[in-house]
Length: 271
Image (cartoon, rainbow, N blue to C red; front, side):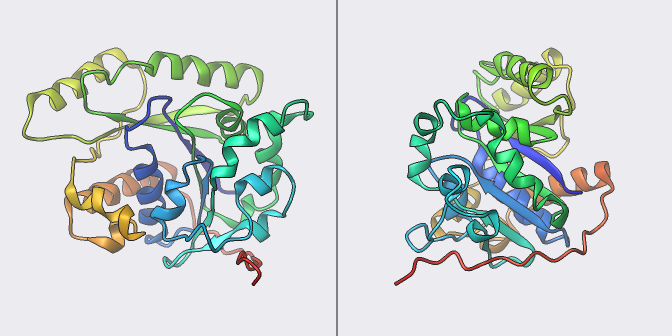
């Protein structure tokens, strides 16, 4: 049964989507079967993995409104073993459309349960806010990975996020746990980045991954080409950092490769 990781931080611009994209790719390139769920209406994880949102018939919006089956929504990427449930801007309206829907906090969970056995890891890119979508991601996930930008306000909002995780755990998903924190946008040229790392270590009683993601031009460029850094520039510092993070997670989990094959249906717009 695959491990489900929600990549989340209520603070925007911290490298959340970059981490979801590149961790997914790094794990897939190590032979894992990965499903990346783009649950952010901005849809950056979808485009960053090469999905043309103009060409797809169904998105995660259609999925949670029960307009399609999960196999119809899924798209295969150019990396073997890496699949995506793409997002669209329509997802922003989902919160309003789900008003009054029974057990709306568990819609995604019920969909994902049907295909969880086909993947080693399912990685959910959450929106940078606390709303119905984020709650759905947290009720679906077993683990939460929190990217933190190495900047002055790094701890701002982190205590609120921890509180949210505890609330969801106590009321909606008793299996949810904080998997750990990963530092992003680390700048070796400044003392500030190192100070932020130390400050977080002193104030947060959670696992902190040794792999630190650097501030890297190639990493920032890759999404505009629709490629994870592992394809865009595999020798860059950013690529090596996400490779290290993937190795840390694999060493920690010790998961074996899932051999089950999933049959997906074409998610192309009908002409």
